[in-house]
Length: 140
Image (tube, rainbow, N blue to C red; front, top):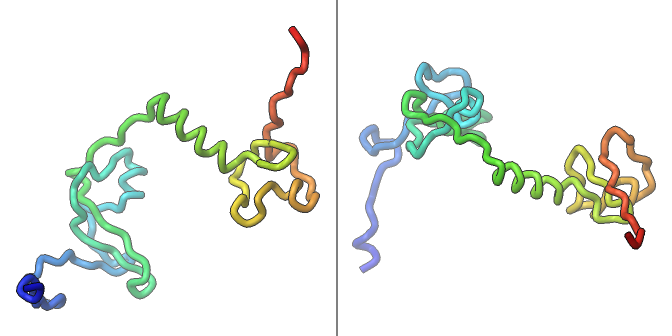
């Protein structure tokens, strides 16, 4: 029964509905753009399917191409989204070690588990982190 569901299709046949594939810098894409290019224009794909594919490095790297005229404007950043993004970045930028500093870059937490200063004593540039807030031990 499972063999009846199989379809024999030639992937190189011109009428199989496959997307056109362009090589790097050889696509005549007047009305096509990648996601990154759409983002630079302030747009997003908006639910449309890709209409072509651009390849480089012998087909090992590729990007989908979308029609610009069907793209929709990017959704604005809300306060809730901004707060969620800040919390996520704080997890990646804050040292879980004794210093507890939040750096301006992501820390190698998977490999080292802390900042370089806590890991091996390499002093950190004071311009690269935000000092943690002081803890008050006053009774008032």
